[in-house]
Length: 228
View: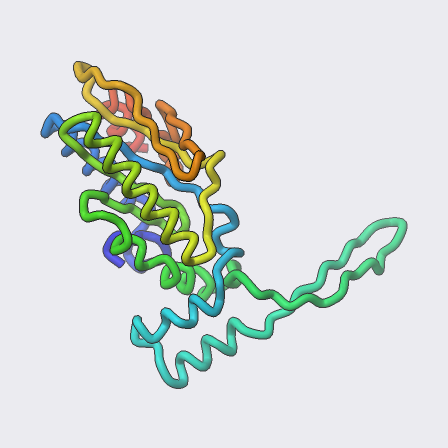
């Protein structure tokens, strides 16, 4: 879980932000281009396929009684919706079995989600630097030129989509953004990242774990943001 900074002891959002900003600044100091995909997953915690999750537990050493305990914890959960109003205070839906998702308002829920997506770094090329905080994910790639950067980004983004589809997860393309980081003196063309006729929006500023990251005059903005 070296790339995962969420819900772990002695690790916080500051560590994930430092990792991202440090990697970008290193790339700029080495006069290479850097680009990051800031991923947004649709209803990530609620979309976890429990059968897939349970099949991953033995890989992490969860077997025997511990595995059965977690299976019991996840399976056979039901939910009901009650609507309170002045007109009718007893409007209640039928009980429905919950087939997907992990309990969010719990200690085990977030941890199980980390297990669910923990193979993400291994599913993408070695050129990519994934930085994860629970379901907030940034994928950073550095390249010596614009053509190579666009090629690497599209390859990795395709691998991510295939991984998420295999785990019954999906990108929210309306909230997934790409930002390219360059020095002021560097002149490059636009980057286009697509998958199955869908395109990621390129922005000059985006938010990651409470930090606004801007691609212009970049170093001074990061230092100022990190001091608060």
